[in-house]
Each structure stands twice: as structure tokens, then as C-alpha cells.
Length: 186
Image 1: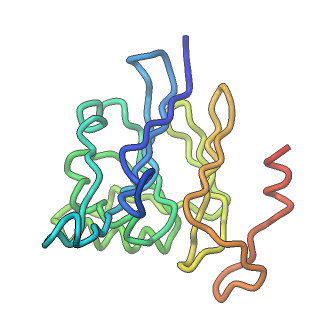
Image 2: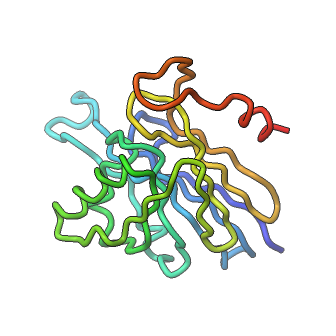
């Protein structure tokens, strides 16, 4: 029986290291997408001398043949900072809007990876990845081109918000479309 699965690999009990998996399909044969690939900044009291940490991607790296893409919500380090250091283990397409794409390109180039793996998606654009249709829903935040993700599956829709703020007069971009969000909720 096909099911929808959510598996956080980081970011759920700390600030940073955001990495989330959504899977769909029969148990043990699911296809997966990853949302975000960030770093964390540990507290000196708990990790003296450690400047940054990354989530552990080994579980999905072992199933890389069933990972259909990485979707980046925005360009803050806790959501995109590990893309360069972990990409070699994942080697799948990366999807994001233009501003995060530029940051991701630089991070891949810093470690000798080609930026050709990054696909720029327009705000409100949709990517088909396996059984997932992922739409980049524009949100306001403290960095340009932040997106929530509308993840549609055969069994339902997930609204993955990541970070956002409701700003009626953002410095850059348009305010969040409250009417579109209301319709999505219906």
C-alpha cells in the first residue's frame, strides 16, 4: 500500500541543520524528495571548537537511487549552507528560485562540483519529481525569494513553510499572497 512519509534528518529540535525528506510509495520502495540542506551553529558549551555542523544524510545517501531532487526554500545558511559539502553524497538535481540558486552555485563551485545540477524555478513554478508536484509559493522573510513549498502527492498536499514572516510591505518583492494561501487551505 502506498503511503506518504515525512522523515526529518535535521532541524526539528534545534535551530539550523534543516534537512527534511518526504517519501511516497510502498514501504521500503518509496521515492523521496529532500527539502533544504543546511548547516547548524553549535553552542560553544556543547561543542567547544566546532564552528558548524551538518545533518547526517547517510540514510538517504544509501537510497540515493530513490531520491528525486533537493528543494531549497531560501538562502539562509541553516537551509542551504551544507549543499556544497554534502552534494557529493547525494548527486541529484537541486531546485530553487534565482537568489538561492546563485548561493547554491557558489557553494558547489567551492568544492569543485558543477553548478549545472541546479535548476532555477520561477516563483509559483512547479517541478515534477517522481510522484511529487512541488510548487514554490512566494513568502516574505529577511532574505530575497523565500518560498514555502506546496508538495502535492496522490494522497494529499503538504504545505512546507520553512521560515517566513508576514510582511505587508517587504523591502524586496511582493507581500505574501494571503488569498492564494486561503484558497490552498480550502
